[in-house]
Amino acid sequence: MANFNTHLNTAAAATGLTSAALLSAGHIDLNSALWLWFIGTVGGLLPDIDSDNSTSLDSLFALFALTVILLVLRFITSGQFREISFTELIIIPVLVYGIMKYVIRPVFEKITDHRGSCHSLLFLLLCALLTTQVTWRLSHADSQHSDIIAWLAGGFVFLGGVIHLLLDEIFSVDLRNIRIKSSFGSALKLADFDNKILTLLTIIAVCVLLYISPASENTISILTNWSNFVL
Image 1 (cartoon, rainbow, N blue to C red):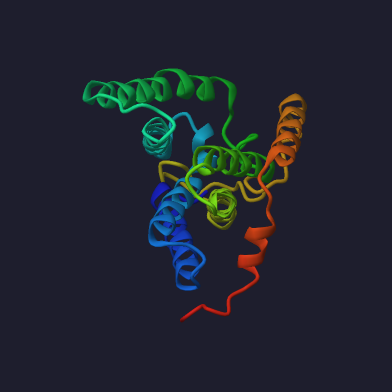
Image 2 (spheres, rainbow, N blue to C red):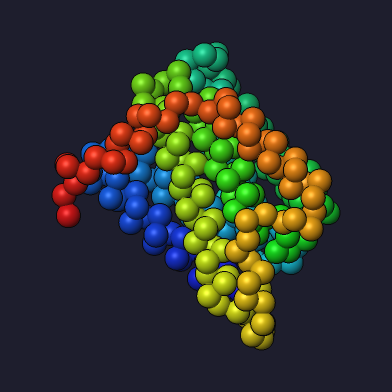
């Protein structure tokens, strides 16, 4: 598989160029472009969430914690909530980080195996739809284009993840760059059919998320119209 730096740099470059293209075409503003770039880069590390000893696991959960903290702070400081105190602004991020590090991370380490369910297109689709749903739910009250940003956010997570899987198929280097491994063909797969129960639950979750997802017509419309793009 490709090493951590390769995953990070390639995902950052690809999603950065994509967000820049959307910005140049007038489909998104600068803040949205930076957010999509960031979340797409996180998506580029996502499949390594099942690697208990990888360098990317520490960095990935740190990025996850940062992302969740930003989303939570945005939500609780929106117009729907009262103003919060300085102490709360300190305590809330600490609590979120603690939950990510000491609750969610150990669960992933216990129930996942490297190159298992997380190294599949089905898992990436689940993560993309979750991202779309969360982004939409947290922003739809503040923006008339929240559905577009939500779908783009999910798309960038999926794009970053696919880049990761493709790199792991192209390269054959272990997580610590110690030796070359003959593991071609194990990274990019539709689903982990060895774990049938987990795969079935994932499919059900994907169907539910698709059913409750925001309308996609506006997003499809802008992605098929590049008349204002300036090279």
